[in-house]
Each structure stands twice: as C-alpha cells, then as structure tokens.
Image (cartoon, rainbow, N blue to C red; front, side, top):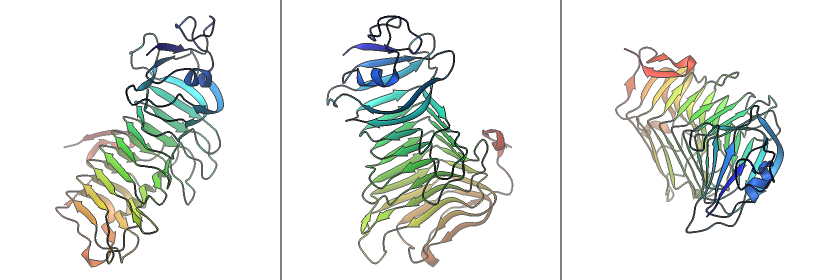
Length: 332
C-alpha cells in the first residue's frame, strides 16, 4: 500500500509521490493508485475544474480498502477538497471517498456512482444547473453515504430528484445526510434491493422549495425491495408529501418487503401528506410507528383502511428553532 498525492497547483514531477510532486490531473490521480492506496487531494485556492471524466479505478481487493481523502493544509485536517465538473465513477469499488466537494452547473449529474461497495463520507454535491431533470448524484451500484450534503437548483423531472437511485442499484444507505431541492430522493423500481435512511434531513433547497422528501417505488415487476427503512429523520418545509410510496408489493401475493418508517418528524409547509401510499389497494407491508406530524392535512394517506399509523404524535406548531436556516434543534 502506498500514499499518493493530488494537487492541481503542484509544480513537481507529476508522479504523485509527495505534495510537491503531486499528480496535477484528477482523473490521472484516481486511475494511478492501486487497491489499498491512500490518495490525498489537496485543496487549491479556487475550485478545481476537472471537466467531464469517467474514472476506472484499480481492481478491487478483498484485503485492502482504497481511500481518497481531501485536505487543506495537512492530511487529516477534515477540510473538503473542492472540484467542479461531471464525475462518472466506474471500477470494482471497495473505495472510501472522504472530504470531497463537487459543485457545478453541468448536464445530467455531478457524480454517477457506478462502482460497487463505495463509501462517501463528509462529501458535498451541489448541482447549480436549472435544467429540468438533472441530478446532483445518480446511484447505479451499491453506495453508502455518511454525513453528506446534496442540493439542486432545478425542479425535478417526473423521474428524477436531487439524488436518483436507479433500478440497477444493489442498495444504498444514508446516515446523517442532508437532502435539499424540489424532490430529495427518487428511486426507480427498486426491486430486489435495500434502501436505508437514518438521522437524515429533507428540506427546501437553497433556491428551490421541496415538494417531496422521498419518492420511492419499492417493486420492479414481481420483485420486491428487500428492505426499506426511514428512521430518526426530519422532513421540514415540504409542500406535497414527506414520503411518497408509488408502488408496494401486492398484498395477495408473497411480499418479501420489510419496510419501516419510524421515529421521524414530518413538518410540512401546508403540505398534503406526511406519508402517502399512492395505491390504496396496497395496505399491508409497511410498519409506521412513533412519528410526529405537523403542517400537513393528512398524517398518512392512501393504503386503504388497513394502513397503520401507530403511536403518532400531533405537532401543534413548528418544533424547531429555525428550520428555514437549517437549525433543527428542538425549541421549547
């Protein structure tokens, strides 16, 4: 295992062997490291434009994890490297991306995760393009995000969101993340996969109000999503639905879906529903328990007469100190 460096402003021999001799091209740096290496990415004085790139990293190793980590003055200082462009990640995976910030006005997406077993920690993705249907992040293979931030300046198309999880994804999880924009997350026919949200925030974008926090289809043909869980999350300021479930397994069949929506806070902006099951015939298979609701016409909607809403709490007013400015501490 080796330690390598990337710094767009380096003036050395471009070998990546040190900060002075760092790689100066982002794609070259990512493709130049082997499985198990650490690549430190030094932040430049201004955001680095790396263009539109497709990165094929080294083959995955079962015994070593590759780390790509941003920094400012000293590796490990926790500061995000800042880049601009469109980043398509291919390869075998088993990679941790840490302290990476990508912001730009580009077509389609800022980052497409098409590499298995990929982790993103303390990363930020801000899509400035206002064209209908672009995304900040598109997930095609298994990816996991911890303490990450997603925002988008456009109104979502019918089949898109700030984060788009496509039908071929092997599963995604989000812990402590912030989703902003017209539609926070959109899943496209997630049959056979698993999705988990824990301790996340869904709220208005910097420039676009939120309509729906999570918009999910949990079945593809006759194949059900294996696991869908939303717990300890905050949905704030949404105008339509906190969570919209477009499709669930046929209750008369043999559903394998295990779904939990528990211990969340839904506080809408005169919204229609906290949780909306769009097909009233799907009235089993979802456990909804311990959620708090305010600023909505319906706490739950759809799902027929057998759709549970256990131990619900009704909020008489905004429970946060200043949710509009992302201060989600509970007030008195």
